[in-house]
Image (cartoon, rainbow, N blue to C red; front, side):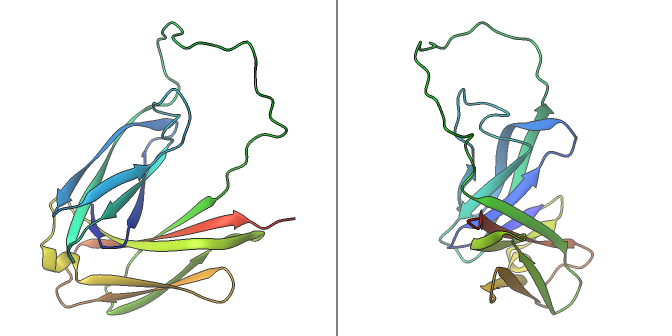
Length: 196
């Protein structure tokens, strides 16, 4: 899979294929100069199941108009195995939380296989009781080998916010779009729970 990067951050989520798996490592193949990172959870110790879960969100940024990357995950069973001795200091005084921590934002991700059409429109948004904070979209090509840079730029997605908490994404395909290649659109909606 090849994902197109841009000057503004491109977010792309990839998940482990098996049930009960967590991410043990991640990497990416690059086509062009890219700054690549991923979103991880805070917590200690740093490791699979703590920093990462079953899915990872890759973040790409580039100064070129056409650059892409292929996200890669290494997945391991989530149950773990073996063990080791405790190496952390446990303080005698414990902090007491009033309530369990609540995530400030919720990432709602929608994947759509694009039709072989010049123009297509896709909508996405938050669930009832949530409001939209931010959004983004990414285009991915399901290929084993990287497509030509002209092919990477042949499908463009433009996102805009509609009234309320809906996102409209317009996808335009050019004549250089590779034939018989599955092209996908991924839309991210960053939502927050509306106060009750």
